[in-house]
Image (cartoon, rainbow, N blue to C red):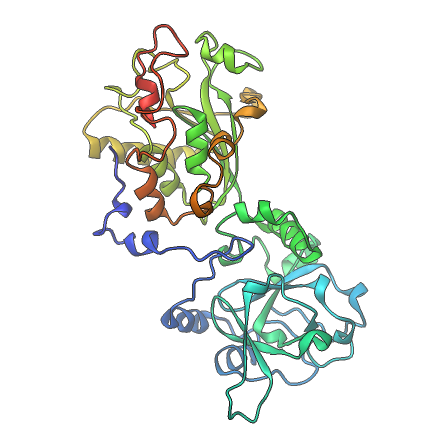
Length: 427
């Protein structure tokens, strides 16, 4: 089976791929950054704010009434919350979302610093109690990812007093003047979640989380691709666990029947394949990594993967894309897979154009996230968690017994009288 080079110990990407994720309640990786990475990022920062470096790295404090964020947003003229654009505040080093305008307290207008009632998520900040013999009895607030100094916590009454220079402000507003002033094209990758599954489960329970979701929807980066690699139940269950996967949807594509049903596709007369439509963040789940993982979970060769239905069967290997860039990435990884396996591949790649719409048909509700419903969360809920790429490859790249629908668990020939069962062995 195909094994991408980044999945081997000798790969230069192995360290990145193998690092385990430490996910926050909102799906951000809050594993501490290495000191060298923090210093390198600090050195790369522009001189937008003369106080930022001293505050973040040396625990200094902004002069009173500066209230200017690292990326230049000035809160000094704010008389109250009504004249402040809605948005989120991220750490100027590391990019982790920390606070939201919905949690600014009324004293912000009269205070010399930004004051918040609460962070956007409790596990995005850390509170450091003063040392026993310290004369400074204040509780320090640091970023959970970068461990950089942000300000101080004064209890439920006064909340969090935060230095503006330690933060970047990302307004939700799409006003062209604001976008030009702050050069905002998209949230930096570090300010976007690794696991969108956590976003689903959070259900926007607080105004600040809903604001974060709006910011991600407005300023995030999204790409889509539709993949077929056998039974869509298991393809969806496995690929949903990759970092950067925003959403998945099981369905049918590649045939000529409008609004096909599962039974019609199974009868083999529609030409449709079982596929999974994936929306993903291409900066978190890179195109090359996504297609590598797709090729690793099934056998894309003509020799044994598809039995007698290699080009029209519902379990065929196929890729449907809507941009030339993604098509190029897919074909590039197919070539690498072909070279490694030394065999011809039967994987079909189609660039779909607007004139082809509609070409994807959503499957019946009972097929959506099927394995999650049937298998549940498993031991300690680990069957739903997002995995680091190397962890994912170890679990799904070798037809592990844990994958429902393996050759041992699926009956042969149950959908088509001429099906020799090989298609089900793709997973």
